[in-house]
Image 1 (cartoon, rainbow, N blue to C red):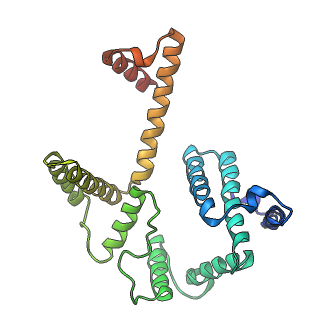
Image 2 (image 1 turned 90 degrees about the vertical axis):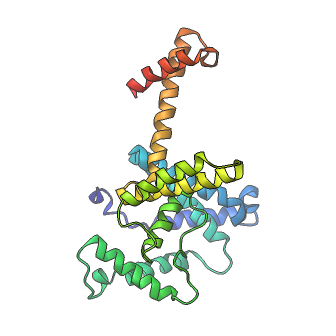
Image 3 (image 1 turned 90 degrees about the horizontal axis):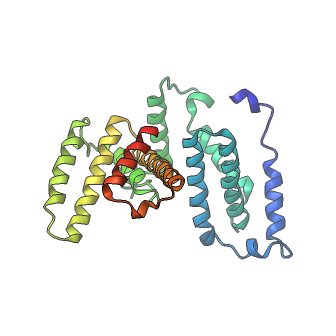
Length: 259
């Protein structure tokens, strides 16, 4: 895979910066000139998730397109900044990658992925400084909740605030289900639901699963099966909403057998 683009140096990124500068010029695009980091925030999130969707689809053409859309947002935000420019952004990440890979760019040793991660975390801690930094710092609040739960769990594990294996969170799931059933009101029910989801995310982490990806997969399959049902119903000239629960169940099972 890498051999297909070894001849490309990335120099064409400069053209995208040039285009964006033209769009943001006084006589450029009114819409682009009206944007701010705050207004671009939803676009950044949307494009990032479309990259994830392309990865899940296993489509390189789709991935190439979505990476370009995400890169546009990065270039857009960089060109808006007043205190830094594109070279500052690229130099910053280049320097970071060299510093945190001393086993490649210096004489440190790290022979396994686990050792690399341990070294990365240690270097990061030294760079950030441990003063006034909590054990859970560094996990973006804006992460999707399930992904954040996994990241928080990994951080908590470093201070031994975790179960030794998957049996612990699995038992916690049963405990939280019971507490959810016994919740006295809507507010308490929501709190217990959160605890249950956190326990499920912890179990998934211990089992090596990504709960965010698992749920996306389920939603994708659900959508595919609904479309099969809709197609079949359309061919028969019937409305799904007008069918009985029993008929819907039968159609769902038939669609599930196909997907």
